[in-house]
Image (cartoon, rainbow, N blue to C red; front, top):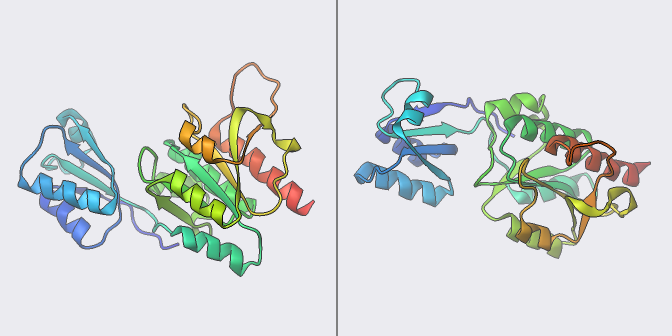
Length: 247
């Protein structure tokens, strides 16, 4: 994957030019209530490129701003180039291996995302798929937390995870959704083409996405709290796939 310098772009004309020059915008903050011509242009460009807009108050923009001249608009560019889902599939084909992929539903903590990408690489997963909305992107913090794994493990960002799962199921991939109410993962067959679906830190996997999965898996625990950290859960499930495939 190609690495970029993550940067903050401030100002209406600057953000418009960033879109038109092909820069990958990861996050976009716009002053709530702003409706003038340049703002409408930015909104159209964001919609065209599938970038989520967060409408925030001026205090939030002033806090984030580096220059103090944001003009009601601040954009963050990605630290790494996103892959396509086809790149992940090709990665498995070139290695002559059954596809092993992570689907991450709404991970917002960059340290968790980076740790999962690192785990995915160590477990031999062929890639990670994240949503464009309601989730952290490939920021510099994510890159650092991945400990270099982003240089080797492709990460694709898609508009609709449910549709992506449906498309991959047509290619013969089986999907296991991590959920506390599922059957113990150690009793499930995770051999063959498989996708592991991990939910957000607070809400877990969304209902519609969970319904698209082939089976629900849980991790047996003996503690007093009700769930594992998302990256820890991903690690346990990832290496159960490794155990079943290679041990």
